[in-house]
Image (cartoon, rainbow, N blue to C red; front, side, top):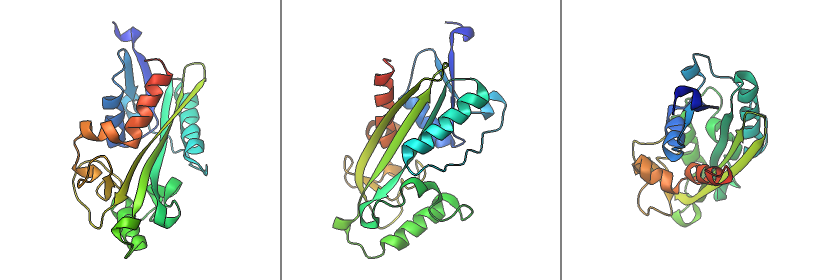
Length: 203
């Protein structure tokens, strides 16, 4: 296979952790997953105005497809906490505010919001919706979820976002941030969505 046979797909993210998960979970022969910076360009600042994960993923995938003229893959994902009525949901990445410290501030606010909520009431899930737009503009949607609960302290130094607080049901006693990338891909919301996408695309 030559470079000209490679199908280049631009991924709508500037998050290196997310890109690594996508590349490792979708080892499509002949496909190359790239960011805008890999193409020598600046990432787009797509305003996430949707009120669902699907709406935001679609906004990003369409914007990247139109801007770069390539197939595009985007996801929107987040944490849904039952004791908080499903929050932070679509606001997961900016739960503490647009300018207030990123992951650390988001985790700090979440721990404050949960307060003295007991362990049995701290159930939550990560949810992910993927949108793939191909060369002709046709769209494929896939989604996945990972059930679990929230701990009382940050543990682990892998992953990103709320991983140090989230205890997946599938790995009792370990947070998402204490898993290897292979272990995380096997159970995570994003891994499940990527596998569903792969199946939908017939790969």
